[in-house]
Amino acid sequence: MQILYFAWVRERVGIPREDVETSAGTVAELVAELRAREERYDLAFSDMNAIRVALDQELSDLDAPLEGVREVAFFPPMTGG
Image (tube, rainbow, N blue to C red):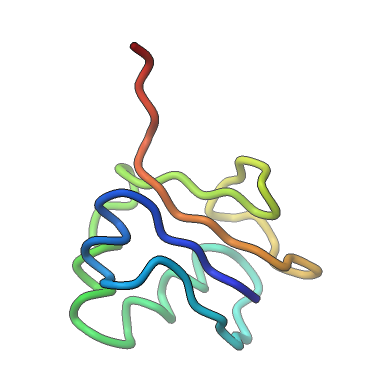
């Protein structure tokens, strides 16, 4: 699946996107796998209250299943203006 990183999440991870093979069943399990990779991922995902996730361009929760998902996007909450 393709993982997209936006705003400061992208800055901390150091790349805008990557293709990942995972055995994770949920978003939370995917985040745990990513955090275990390297310190930069651990830092980026250290406060999941500050990150939103979209699965195939639809907002989702951390307990959302990943089965059939092609794209996961991580980004900070949006503010209006």
